[in-house]
Amino acid sequence: DYQLVDLFTGAHFQPEYVAINPSRQVPVLDDGDFRLTESSAILKYLAETTGSAAYPADPRKRARINERMDWLNTGFYRDFGYGLIYPQIFPYMRRPDDKVQAATVTWGRDKARDWLKVLEQDLIGPKNAYLCGNEVTLADYFGAPMLVLGEIIHCDYADYPNIRRWLGNMKTRPNWPKVHEAFYKYLVEPAKDQRFEVV
Image 1: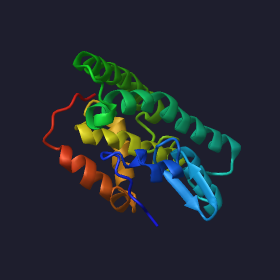
Image 2 (image 1 turned 180 degrees about the vertical axis):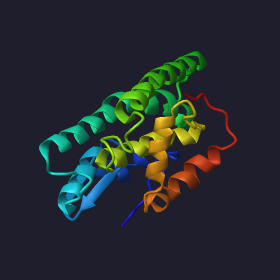
Image 3 (image 1 turned 90 degrees about the vertical axis):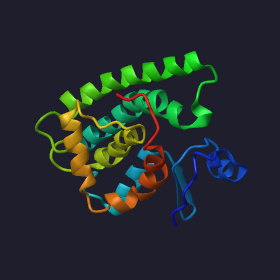
């Protein structure tokens, strides 16, 4: 069963959810008597248990996938998500002082631009269809939703043609519309007339 956790109303801070994940974050996977948190761990677990071709057994291919996922999670997302996007969309992430808020968002924007240049030029580049070459991998399924978060604040990645191409490839995946339906309905659509600082 799929359960939507409303981050805007702070559902992840409620005692019922904290009992499920004390870190107060999404997502959480319950697989029988096994509970797992953290997107990266969940994706790897699901790929392992299903034998997904998106997470090949070859140690070098898998290491490259893990490298890309770690790069996205420990570098890029820290500044893009927590520095630029979240302080603008989540009331509980907004800084109480306007000057501090502006400085946080400016810092996040500038750092995100640096990360986007690396993603654009070095990780994807002009020849790769995906993050690890021309085959879709777990890194793409992990990373594309991070970049698509930018659509909430109207990022169109016009200055990043390789990123746009990659995201376009991901959006043509068969399950993309279904998987991201709630995202577009509850996050992107309500924010369409708001003004944001973008990359």
